[in-house]
Image (tube, rainbow, N blue to C red):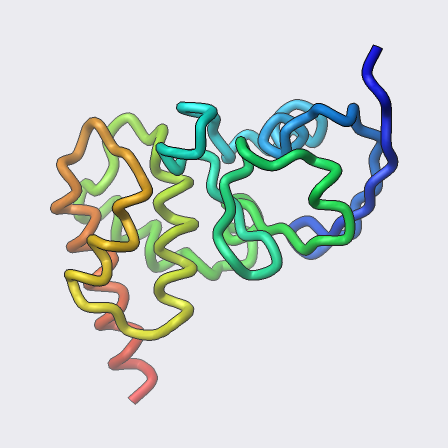
Length: 160
């Protein structure tokens, strides 16, 4: 029998309290207990990036983290970034450039891109470097890099 713990965290802007098993991974907590299924579980080894969430403003692999470790943290999922409109331009550009196919990796890539774009205007090499922790088996990455670069350029132009 697994030990249970009470946790409280801020999730997509709302305070959430729950009881979790000590061994429950954050990804499983988000998907199964909170029904936020945008966070995908791929490799379960922290390699593929499908489970990326923002934890206290930084990208984190939710398959490698226990839910109890997120106690007191601020977490944003792809659902939260979508609802707030933070990634609306990225999502539109991904669709326009066919930068997604099966879509399994897309939420993790969007989380990576959101963190990268929040830091400034990356060039293509920086985009590729940031995406090196996200596996996509369908697209070949060119359209993904193009979409992120286009949004970075548009955002930089809007800020001028």
